[in-house]
Image 1 (cartoon, rainbow over the protein chains, first blue to last red):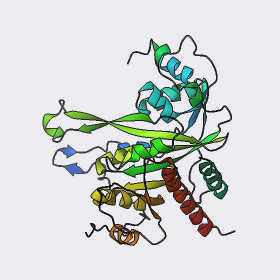
Image 2: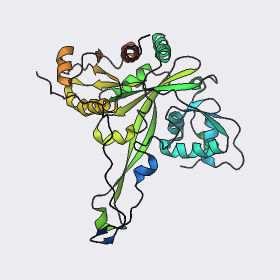
Image 3: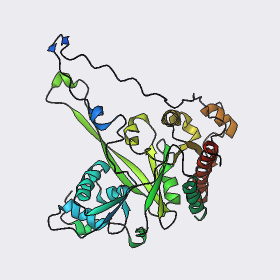
Image 4: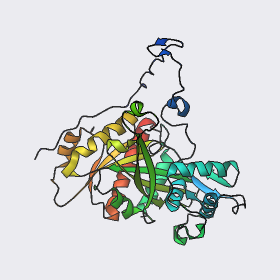
Amino acid sequence: MTPPQRRRRFPKTSPEPAPQPPQEGQDTPEGPKKNPERLYVITGPDGTERSELDLVTLIVAHADPPPSATPEQAALLRLCTAPLSVAELSAYLSLPFSVVTVLLTELLTAELVTARAPVIRQALADRSLLEAVMHGLQRL
Amino acid sequence: MDFNGSDTIPGPRTEDHLPHTAQAAVKIVIVGGFGVGKTTMVGSVSEIKPLTTEETMTQAGIGVDDNYGSETKTATTVAMDFGRISITEQLVLYLFGTPGQERFWFLWNGLFEGALGAVVLVDTRRLEVSFDVMGRLEERGVPFVVAVNTFPDGPRHDIEELRTALDLSPEIPIVECDARRRASSRDVLMTLMKFLHSLAVEKAPV
């Protein structure tokens, strides 16, 4: 049986040109138009600057929940007495990742938790990191 | 959800706690269509019972302008299963299984950010489900390997036939696996790591 056929794609080297905003004060059928701020301007082109928290950022609580903590914050603080990823916190609390990042941002600002940043893939992967992962997998 | 009874929130079991020495985490994404075995693969190698994180997708209804003020929105909850492997006392590896269909690509924002690489899990009964996924990874420059989860009733193709059908360049590894078996899933991850290592050596031969 002949399998279905795919066609390869290639990295997008240059970002697509941004659409030209209409000139300020340019008349449209509805009258002069103002430029509302587009959402992607605020969040960056690929949402990359949206949040410094990754699914695998490790969170550690510093302190017991203060009396002022909301129930959600208190639950979160109790969960991460030992390091726990944002993904695990989201799973245990049954809250979406986006909601957990909001809660964590508050706790980070209040210095009740610290975040241990993930090791991210650079343009050039760190060979010793890859080797460490391979050694770890070999022991499985 | 009522958090006032938060003492009852299930947390990690004692044996699922990471050591305090855990400093950093890396992630690998396993992507494929429904029923292809992503969760099975995550579960077979994970040291914790696979967990689920959910995200809500809100879609504005079509024709919003026509019924301004009463926009119809539909919210869909999408689950993403993940597991964990402690690599060293300091380093943790997370594995995320994510659906490959185009309507779930919103989940990919941030998911592939910084991921080491991806495993595209394919089912020879529905090979075309993985086509868009591979294209998307190629466009994003995310390195991936292809793992063929072997189902007893699936058509068998030899690897080179698959490579041609998937239009994969010769250096991209294609392996067969049985996602239910820990050793087999581990070997798939190892294939990805070796591939990533070869890319790193190629870019900076020292």
